[in-house]
Image (tube, rainbow, N blue to C red; front, side, top):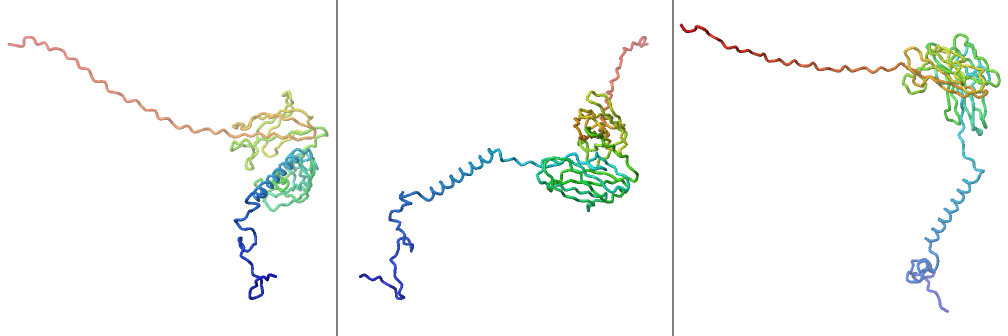
Length: 324
């Protein structure tokens, strides 16, 4: 029997390993990885990575080709307006003593989408009304906003209604509460539509109304049918616009504008609108006083007169009987 050699503490001694203490094969001995005895680790990793990429590509292609995968749509609103009745036509001025206003808008492509309505007084934040509701699909919303709405103080200031869709600002509208009763907007009969128009001072000429650009008075708005036959005329006063023409049958209409004195158009004077049943369309015209460029006087050089040399005439002197 051969005994293993032990150390003084009773542990077995081990022979030195050619690969440290791991007991593996020495560098001089054949290696299944290095000498071709099997697949290398690098090749195995490359093969696994390639297979994973192929599976990911096939999965992506199947999801894109599947008819059940719907592309995401972005929800939104249009036709935001304030009204004095539920689902009513637009009203921009309310009488003193108003206790309830209605925020009306059309929403689309919603899918359990939160829509927040916020009303600010003329003095600015904080809000005096705020409400969030969720909506699905397409439709028209009418949000009742009860409260105390005192007349806006002089100089004229506006209440502001902002609407946010899924946390993002979507649209806003300004409106006033007057010290006297405002003219009520008639409710159009069922199956008809409304066209509203206004004229504003496009001071910077950017073809759209900015918050600091006011309404213009003394412009004439004409509504015609598709054959250019005039139906209504209205002269703006710069305070009660947009002016609305309710009770219109569906079809095409032209809205024409005649500029106030001393103004010229920036947006054109004719707008063609196609009106659907129950819809409200808007026409906005921008005008401004023409900017006359200041002419720089041109200096004209005065020609210098050249002196003409005087001509001298020499005549012979004839002397007679000069000698004695």
